[in-house]
Image (cartoon, rainbow, N blue to C red; front, top):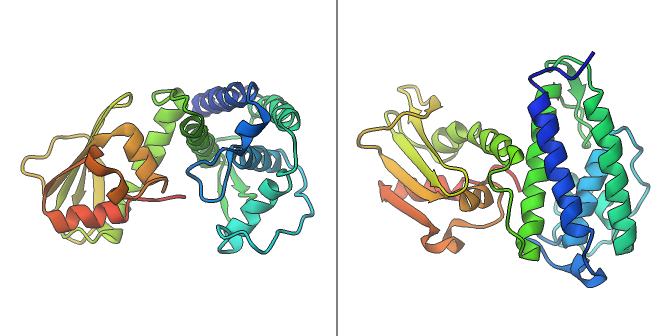
Length: 276
């Protein structure tokens, strides 16, 4: 048996993005691993440690037994504490140790993904400190999104832009778009009858409209809306940074063009981050 056809694009996208991270960090000097990223409290080394740690858990590796320092300001709850263990345990690792471990993880995880024979709808336990079950397909899509997002964190920290239109970028876009109806209708409180247009340009261009129904339910489509309540025009990288909590709207400056009802536009941007 082979990987289910609906999973193969995500397997390929994960591989492409993970290998891009390895290509980015392998030639780095020791000091470059300490460069700050847009992830609060995390350096280049920490971001790579996070990727290694999560994918190791996806492989079924046991979590390290490790006590965290008490002065990590960015560790604010049980979830961030859970995430930090895999990061902090590697803060003493050298550049060679980091790149070698990442290389080995990619080989092992890639082999696991290529040999995946389960149905996309198979329920699996999400390993990251919860008892939640989700489908194999959604889990893999999330892993693609997470690895690509951290690839972009590293690229910005290192000043090496790229892969904003990669296969993983496309999957990440669709993952983020799934959250838009909730952001607009529930979180930002768009009223019934509202139509909010997102006009995104750059390496990955798309136009989406979120329409709020009479009962407050929202749906998203790619049709042009005449006389929308709000239009937000921005580039794809800014869209992703906002949605991933890497930048606040007030710090994005003139990279966001707002038209229509200003109060609703600001409410949407204020609630735009769906992950961090």
